[in-house]
Length: 390
Image 1 (spheres, rainbow, N blue to C red):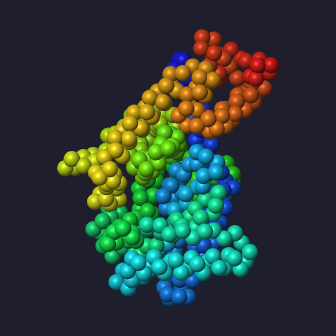
Image 2 (image 1 turned 90 degrees about the vertical axis):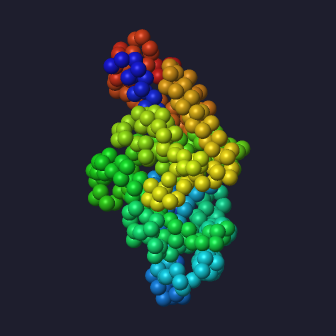
């Protein structure tokens, strides 16, 4: 094994721990899931009682894709995006009416929570949705939606899951398909996703279906999480120009080519993100892979600084990770990743890495390459009790 391979393995291990640190903690994930399932069950019953038709609620966005990231600041809340699909025809309602109906339902839900003595979130109106804000924890954006009666015109797949959604700033219904997008995203990494899901199930001795797809940590997911974290750190103080997650996620998923290692995937994707940005009639296009009529970068036309800032960010991503790869010595790597991803995340990742190295050292498995001082499984055995300089 040459020096570059050793450095790559060491940095890949550290990047892997960074990815773990970016995940939604399991206790937070379970609480989010418990709350949105409780809300979904209640809305379904309320909808049947008041409107005599069926309904469902399900997650969309990063929670469904498995690419959600821990906020940069501990006091910031997690975003939880939900779809509330009502099984009624478009002709029987209007955008304003659908959104008002949801407001009434959510108010009844909050009354129920208060009567039970449960935590009651604040109800906040939004452009497309209503938000249940659990202060200091997370906020759930509940998007009212209906089945899309023109699904075939706007969707390349999963027509039964196509939706029309409300938007108070636009006169026409908007077309969406978050389930279809999630299925496309999973298909981009299908083989590895299913293999690792099977491995996780065997490791904890449960049926494979008990492992949620979105909780399987694949190289693509980890790479996207790290890119999103780098973006969040880079755009602190300039949130208005921060690129929306769907752009980064779509570009990365399109560029993914089956890499099985997180660092390998991160390097490959970073080099190819620009290639997914098209131009049509002088306008930047990041097409929705489910609905090619939709341009995820549509705001770049009127707000050209968004495109400029995005390309500046891509350049910074390449610079920062190239710098980390070239560094030798854990302290220099730590300093490099701290600047790129935040000091706390880097510190926790290196603590995990140190704990693993410490165990290998105690077991007599930790070795040091004679020319570079890199720690790994090749070279001279490191004697016990030297990892922390004792």
